[in-house]
Image (tube, rainbow, N blue to C red; front, side, top):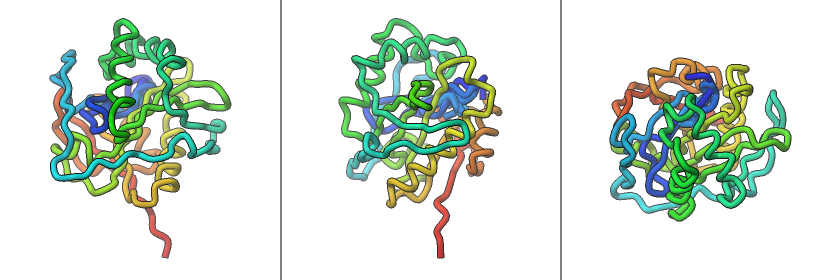
Length: 252
């Protein structure tokens, strides 16, 4: 992953279009890619290509839309690097900060949302005005906003057109905002904590997915270190990605 800048979206489901992966991990500038599109920075499968703004906002055919419920009520989760809380984005409060992060060259390389705040605002509104299948969130660590996440229904996302997905699979995109927070192992710790939170709060979810760009090996490594396995390689619009999978472990 690039310097923890994040994983980018891959043409996600949720609101009309969005990045997948982590961006911000500097790598996790993705490390969801942890850049959210970057943990391995990953691009939106629905994008027109590098530098292209058009995204595929369609949904996987034949599925009923169901939101990712209750993230605002998920509460804090302890991690090895502090206490993390996912807070659904409020544009009036959060847009200036998110637009600044998106204009960091390390993040912009994967998220492709550099420019005026309205560029980031439109990306957020596509999700916030949608049906709840993708939820943009701030990652607040020990009270300080330091990362951006997109938690989305992978089975309702355009990603489902490019690789096999299961009902209720959840995808993650992430980016670490400040350059000083990248490259220090935060991406792996946060990815592990958020993945555990998703599996705990969403009992119908049996897998958490990410699709970091193969050009971002740091992001792929961060997901591996967080317990994900590399399932296959997938050609998405604008990138070739590693499909990373974390399975729910069933207790007997």
